[in-house]
Image (cartoon, rainbow, N blue to C red; front, side, top):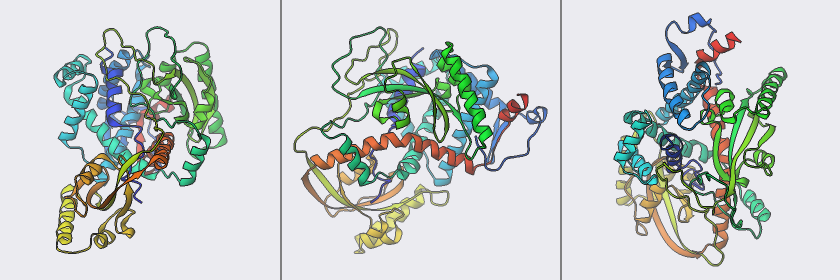
Length: 498
């Protein structure tokens, strides 16, 4: 079975992320495994270098320019902006993470085309019910250059592709996991998270009868603890978390404290981690805030990453109407969660095989496609698809001759599914590109089957994936950081001043 090609969940869906980014920021107005020798503050900045990530240099000028842009966005979102040195250190950490992901994309040959960026631009405009020209004007009004905005979109698309390839593919959900989930939720509808967060209400409104899952929007402050840290370091981090919690209880602004102190990837968004059903948050979080009212703050939670403090920003139900701000262009309405209907579900399944050639620095798109075109020509002249898959495919299904078994609608990534659906039984596709590389697809046969039980299992897998993909993504970033050479000179200077 090819777990990478199948996509039981994509919690960080690009279109959703872009729409939320727009409505939140534009339309509203490290660890290193190879430490470098330390240098004094006067030595660190004489050359204008803020950090070195492997062989890439991040300059102070780049950090300051990005910090100006981030400051403007935070002001538009009414997030208290930390002092300039702190803001620059937070921005630099984001830039380091981005550099690590760019390096990984280059290593494996992940590239984003201009056409993909253009489709993303159109998706953002459509979701906000404006034209591309209006979007461009809004970006300008927000103080951001259009070319910089498109560059950000390109990076988001690239990151989405990397998550599919390296994060989702590593998450294993066993049949016993699904059995346990279904047993715990026997007799209950399985509901998936909505595709966008409902907008906040300007004034209290009566809650509807709860007919769907409760949605929780959370923010966090993370005080990260290094792997294998000494007990003294753990205690120091705990005291820092306790100090922050005291500030919050004394009335400090949570978003401002998160922006200044959190080590989480969402620090400069006030720690906002988004919205999802209560049960789809990690168990540690869900239990801690199960009865916390909107605006409430948790105690200190300890996980493998460090110490967390959570704030419940909003909680409600997906069926609640989404009021709009008076002077804000309207984002697309948020649909209710998808629920599994009762009764027979007749679904057309496809039995398919494929051959996967992955891209890398050595094998680019052109080479991968040419390889598959050669294999397709050999198949047309009588060679066995299954035998060629065993010899050439780079997917886990290769030993089975590329056999993917019976596939249900929506079970594979869109590019693959569209190409597969267009084939007749016995037909072989042209080379098809997906986030995982290039494919040849062969459809063997089709059948119609009652999928009521199977569909519940598929949806259960998707819900379980939703719960695991966030921590898995952060673990993957940790691995990139641990394998890279990172010389963060801003952080060293700050530590020297303490």
